[in-house]
Figure 1 (cartoon, chains in turn green, red):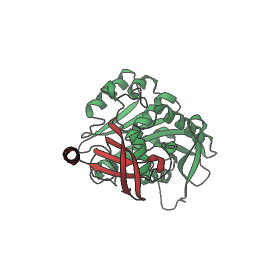
Figure 2 (figure 1 turned 180 degrees about the vertical axis):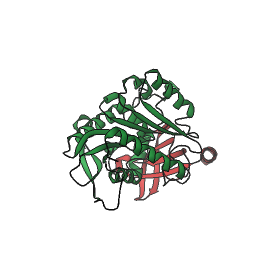
Figure 3 (figure 1 turned 45 degrees about the horizontal axis):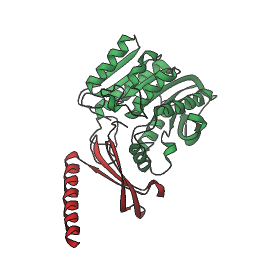
Length: 256
Length: 89
């Protein structure tokens, strides 16, 4: 718990980290100053890209005592405004899942290698980033906790929605999940719909996984996004952030 | 991406964006999250020339109804244009 007599400090900057195939990609790295040890959180940005909201979220984790890293998963598309870069990736049908997994591997290794690390790494993402966080948790098997915020297409109902970039629905990897999962969803969302979340939950139960799902009434897709007035739901967002920090606090060794 | 709805078509023409006029190469039409309009999903049209840089882009975000109306208006204008050109011959 924070008290006003505590020292606070934060460093936040753009760095380059080794990603898939040894490519260096840019990442926004925000962490508390001090010797630590600090737990880490790897953030997966949403479809609109490596944007201001995600930089703010990265700093929010650092403010709460985590070394937080958000790689630019669209790095290879080139550089420009986040919108111009994301528009290109959107037109290309998204980034390949295998590439995201490779990027995440490099980022997790980077976070664990820091002298301030306590060795624990959590994964966190919203929208397509929620899907990526879950996918990476299942495929790499080296995270200590994962948070999926309204990740669409974890469950795929039509095979035509499987693409060369996303050839396998992440729910198919559920048996390989080996860390606790927190999922936050909106009842009015259509991707994922409450029915798709229920399918995901059944799969988690079938394999005896450690998970917590919360379905918020009166919320749809993106209810944390304070810069999207039509999507933002203050009450649900405040509760959701509390659930995120409670969850990571329990599983990543963050001192309360 | 949160949907898999993307259509691409090569186009010839020009567009005026943040960098001024540029030659067009492609139109990318998607139904996915928009950047500006306050909708969860929109019909997004990106008129681009990626050979000239990522900022060679004019983006439009439309409701489904507006996109249909635009498509109908485009087709009506094109049909009239083809008839006009036919008459001109």
